[in-house]
Image 1 (cartoon, rainbow, N blue to C red):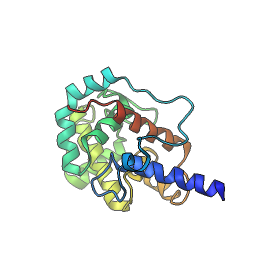
Image 2: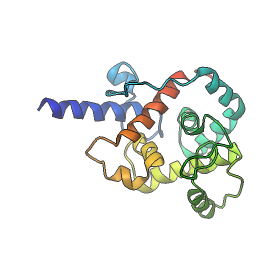
Image 3: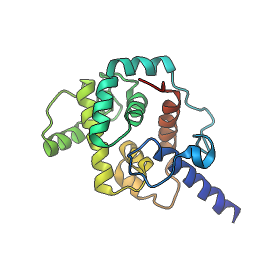
Image 4: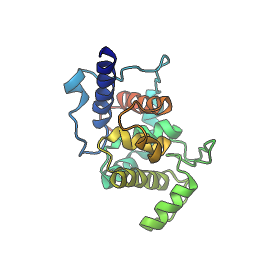
Amino acid sequence: MKKFFVVLLLCFNIAAVIAIVGRSNANIAPAEKITGRNVFIGASPKPFIPSSEKIREMLRKYGLSIKQTSHENGFTPQTIAATIYVESGGNPKAKGSKGEIGCMQVMPATAKFIEEKFGFRGDLENCSYNMRVGTKYLAYLHDTHKFEYAYQTLAAYNIGPGNVMEYPQKKLPEESMKYLQKIQGTIERMPKHW
């Protein structure tokens, strides 16, 4: 019985923390009101501590595009900025090990799908265009899969929607947990006003 409550508390806290960074229609109260802090239970032994200076530098370069793109797609600017930072550190030329490209590490096949579906055209190595495609894909994931919580959308962006659908009543895979922890850690280190 004790294990059940620990798992339940873990799931509730993760949902609460991620909901504050996600789409405005998330079905849960902000974590500060529930736990008093924005923390993940079961955090990795080596916590991810992003560089405040690198975050500020990224926001100076791309802040206006981040704000515009996030608002167009129903996300908070902090969520998109943190996703960009975690995915690439804001490097428009970043290349992932599986073929991901640019600031939001968009897969070329995903970009082609979004471009055809929404009529976008551009260069994935242009950070503003890349975040436009990546953020539209986040919105598509959220709307198409009817995820109840923002953390599910972010996890789907990281490991694919099918993989997230396998975990409706279970803890997400360790890879996703670490990814979500990095996003939360980045949001916590972000300047209040930018």
